[in-house]
Length: 291
Image (cartoon, rainbow, N blue to C red):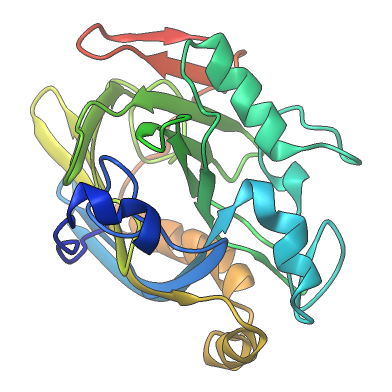
């Protein structure tokens, strides 16, 4: 998900005044933002295939969801609305009623030795008229000092499975580059013996998520999202509803439409399984471990 460069980091003394944190290349967004942009894919083999769809994603501070919902008429937490966020749409095993996603994620990260006591921001699609499917949700996990400590990539497939990759952030500033082996079956047209290379920006005026997938012979798939951010307001939500009608339904419809085109191009389906554990914990320069 290609993105524009972030603004240069200001002097350290101005961090508290303008919302910047150590290790951030741009001011952190507020409690709720929306990023409008495009999802693009390019498959390199065994057949070439491209797609591009206009979409939007929310960036939500998980500790401020109730406050965000109270201040808006068209957005709710854990109840039906034009736009809504349900904790149970994320986090494997989270209770259908009363589950707290922020607490769940901090417990999982703490068990992996990662301090996520700072801001916990989630980039995802919201429910629209009660429906959502998120192929990928991204958690930006900050420690007590405000440093971006880890990124969690929560992946869902269309067969009801989900799995999350937890990767510590080693870069203090600028773009983030991370890698991990694939451990979860996602696309029925992709083998399991592959590796992901992530290239991420830090959310600010823009956001960028890029995933390059490769096998032993080289690149297989490029996938990316880049978007421009704005504060979440009722006026903006109303505009999004008419600019992207039924977008979340179109996400799942688009996945099946592109799959049909791949079948026509002659690709064969593969089978896979969901790991028993909810998380793959990636140790820097030391492979990965299940948790």
